[in-house]
Image 1 (cartoon, each protein chain N blue to C red):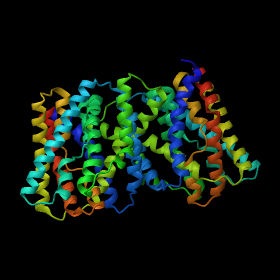
Image 2 (image 1 turned 45 degrees about the horizontal axis):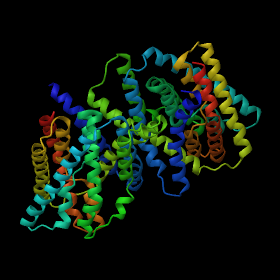
Image 3 (image 1 turned 90 degrees about the vertical axis):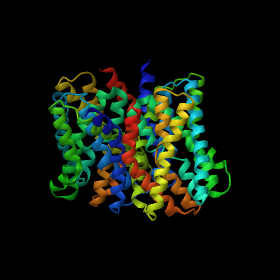
Image 4 (image 1 turned 45 degrees about the vertical axis):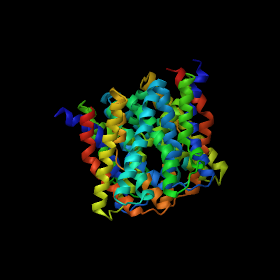
Length: 293
Length: 296
């Protein structure tokens, strides 16, 4: 019974917060997604990165270990997914980003925090930042058909990551007031991200059930298998191994849907994948955690 | 650490976060205050109250003591405020809430947290629980002209506070999943409230500066004076004394403007008091902090 308590303490907060958002949109209330995503991605997440890395001092060796593993996972997943999608004659611009970029932010970060504490969160943030860079460059490039670095430079999360690296490198500790401010602002990240996630899910509809289930299961399965394989290959241990496999095993990220809408790449299909894989993760996430803990 | 640096590092986060909201409001970007208000009042604040009270940083006795004293403060403030308004022939229904209900949430809670840590936050919350209950009942009654207890029981607010008090009274800890959920949802309340405060300050207009200035001064002076008096009378020391005086001396709560606007009670006059008293309080905050920290 103890394990049920442990798992529910990690998983339930995430799904309950998302449920608030889901009921919010389903009850027909307005939800200004622009306002919330500006608060989250321009203010809260960058502050969370700075506050976390000023508290948790990771060695550069650990950071490079997880960064190399994360990049390898993204690349291997991209190759495997591209081959499989080609085999089934599915459009790469529409489906490939969803296969490569999982929900490492809204779901991956809080789960990492609750399961592995502050250190888990710091490691998960490294994985997340690389994913965000990838989404804004490669993800946007696949969906739009051209590469643009302009978006990336304007991304405050990247600036925060640069500050975090400088802090570790030069061994600077932040003045108390900056730490307190970023800590407090960073506290908005999880609840707002999860409520916004619930709201987006509440607006999406499943249009193609069969293909959605197929691709959703495929995403969760290759995520876990490639994460596990890469962790074995690099002989990762302890929290680093757990975070790598956990982040790799997340469902399809909602940001893929947003790109699909912007670039008109079959958004209905992507919506089905997002909804179904997130729904499935209610079952797969506890199992994954059971394996990792 | 010298006292100046200490005070600066307590106040700076407040200015930074409210400043973000102020710049946001000034830049003319849309900011849906209703959405943010609903998120904080219905989810964030109840969750913050729940997780703070069930963390057992304060005992039920301490909770009862400080909220009881704050209750006396509110009554005294309402009486003095009513006398004052009668003397100057101002409408009591419109201005009494603005003179009596301080900004214990947006401004009081972050100050209590930064000045006195988690115990300070817990005591600040104890006061805030009583204040917000009074604000939605008495304040609502004044502004609307009628008593309505039913509307209070429809909001999740009271139910969650009741649940927190049960856990607190029986000194049991809630299940981990409840505690974790309350903690993350509660985490958004203080920053969102502060950003929203900044946005409100940038949007509210001061039409009658003189009247706003006098009423704002009355709020700050009555609040500070009563806070110090009650802390002496009940022989409070340390963190409890600091939190009580801080919370009593906060400027007029933005909530007063929202209620005045909803029931059309001199909303522009109340808006002026909110803005002017808040800026006056920000200017005098270093001295207030000095008084509170040195008297420990």
